[in-house]
Length: 68
Image 1: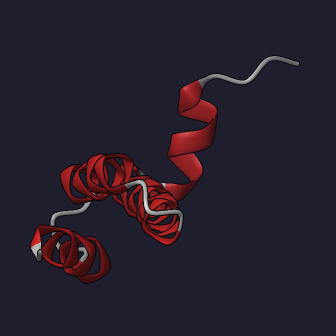
Image 2: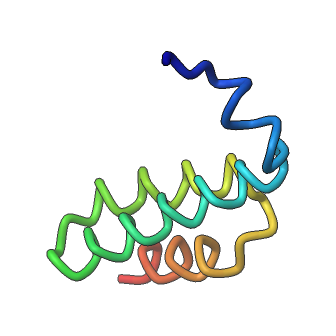
């Protein structure tokens, strides 16, 4: 049986899916920070904010990455 994106999105809703994806990007950004891959971390944090502009963790990571 093949699944479509509608099969996945419909049960949880697009807002919940966006938040879930944003959280995944934030976790990935944090992993990049830990491995000192600053540009990759910044990219993932920005992706998280694009999906969920209210993500305080993504905002925190971006603020930290802007610091010298």
